[in-house]
Image (cartoon, rainbow, N blue to C red; front, side, top):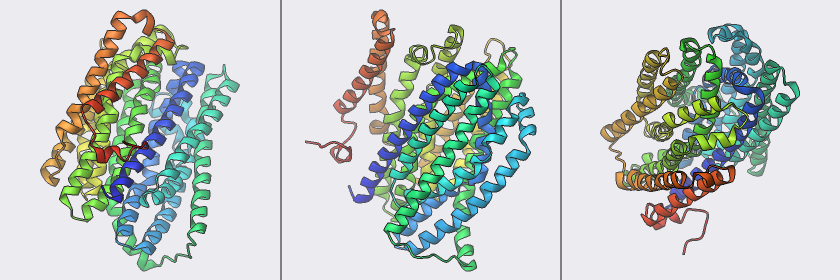
Length: 516
């Protein structure tokens, strides 16, 4: 395989491993945080995120993704000066847009809090608002390096960001307890501090890179702005709309769950769903999202080279990595939901552990659907069909809202309706986008290599877990036993993959080990 394909695999590995480590740190943060502030405090903390991420989607307007794609495209054509002009224009625009969103969130903090059914979160929106400026600036710098197929700065910065948030958040939570409200505000403050730190680090890295490569001054005139704005917004608008639609799904949840549940502890139930459960679901999604991010510039280059055979191979490489990562995680979460949650959240009451474990089992398959959808959406953007994914995601959100309306008010279903609706939402979107890519672009998934072999390995792994728990629960039911079973399951899965020859020699040569 050629250098560009090697860059894709290595880039996907770097971003995936960096994202996984960051998510592990994020989970390590939320585990003690949940044990410190409890399910109600976690409910307050999680209510902040859907509106914050929605504003963040607007603040970025899809520009970092478009920036990465355009830089990769222009570099492929040798237009390096234009790449730098595109970056400079996008950077200035994101800075201005971020500042505007900071003012909007601060001004609407009380309105947002009341619409969610809990006015206590108003202060949190004021605390986290400055991050709406820090994140777009940071992501513009990350997009520059990603467009140049250098994924290292993004991966490292993401990890450091999580370390800062963990340290500051836990310190504040411990310091302010037993005042739950102040402890939650301290945890929210940690978000702003960590995002500011990321911006500073990425700025230093970029300035060092510019000095090393002796960048001259780039002047962007009015004619440049006009010629640059059109391709940026042609790509950014559908990305922003897709991100906005996806985040609206979470905002709808934050409003519907608390207001539609007929139980008195609705905020606590929301805290369990968005805290312990979503933390577990987020780990594999972070790992697979590296494939989606790395696939965009790589497949863009392949698409514009007009090599259909190479495009199909790149597409299937991305899909194979996505399934290989997501399938065992989904099966493992379903089979080990209670032992994992019991291990990590021993500070929660047993009834809340039970509810969380059922939620995790019900939503486990959504890991696969969301991971495949993320990669497919990146492919749509890479081949110039971004609006298709926006339309599909919008219909999927309608499906989710309808299922929520039907299930959440039902006392026999309760909070479990949120897990069911999320799984159905991502299933619908995944099926639709795969059909679209096959019919309109001619990209077909190699079912045997990409799906069946990872699935067979995942099912064998699940069988081993089931047998181990059934016949040796006294051994594997302990903390050490659970960790040993997870390690054993992973070994069984990857051994089966190699036995089934899921990867060929050329693909194995990209792994960071020497092959005989």
